[in-house]
Image (tube, rainbow, N blue to C red; front, side):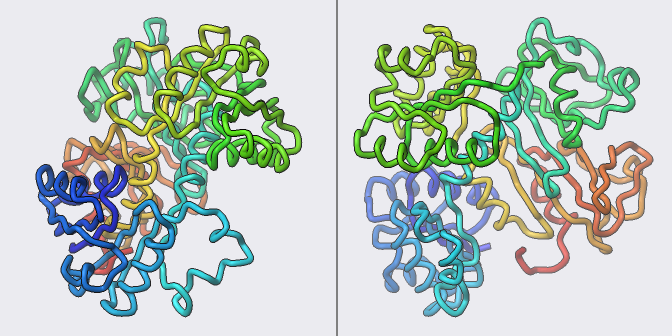
Length: 458
């Protein structure tokens, strides 16, 4: 597949890195010579210095032969015009744009991004995507990661195994025998610095992170089985009232989480603006690194601090400081992957990588076949993929144990006509089943082939 990416920042670089590693033909455009040089030096991709919305630059990058354009520059308007030019002049089939400003996405302007007006096939709003991830983490205390699939009927959660975890050192087949009515499957284990797909005789040890696919109503029970029975947060402090922080506070109010919220925002004008837009949330003007402000936000009696500023260092330090002042838990937004390996030793319970969230959203539309959703694991080491089985799929009609499936993937759950099915060796997949698969990076192409109906991209 030939892909043109406009924007070589963190997200653009991450997408290019993933697609180039899978032997796609990738061209990246950016106005920064330094960023383009980094693409040329480190990736098997071509780099072009220029404006991603200009026809001659797009032509030089190969837009005439491109199957897809992904516009993820820092500017919404550049992304929109790049997609328009790609459509009007080069007839690029699939156009994806990152749109940050919520003013473009309001319901009464929904016809803006249509074939007749501005032909963008997929709109990605990082603030909403990340905000939803934050909300899922808040709703599932104890989970290091949480994603929903199959119309919210199935969830994947990452759970850390502590020293006193009840299920460590127990072979997985014994766990199945002990809890036969638990609709959950351990599909992956991250141990040290590597990930593996466990077999029935494998077991977990303290320090492991287990990736579990479960029926939605069984997720809390699965967390409890691993020793994570943390109550939902009743008092939450949000550090950072930017687009993400404001969205999270709005949704907590709207969805009646039942939690008392306080937002700490460093910019005075922004603090006033979000205070006017929130009904039951207290907004404090000040720095998340100011102990006086944190104490004024009642951090000592809070259950959770969520650090969502645009500065990783502020997010890290405010999270650590909040815990020192008595806050029970913390969740930090971290853009820089270099910081993510130090979170546990610093006392940060969980973090969210916005780049990974955005890349996962893009991959959903890059993958070939009936792929409905994709979630990237550990910076691309693996993916959780939801796909729809077709009549022609090699998965259909045979018991799973008789299928020649690679060792580096595992089927975690099946949804058939809205009903959850826990996969066993005797299970037979039918056409139109929704299948959730945990696949190591090397197995992703195999998954695509299993769910591919033609040469079209879905």
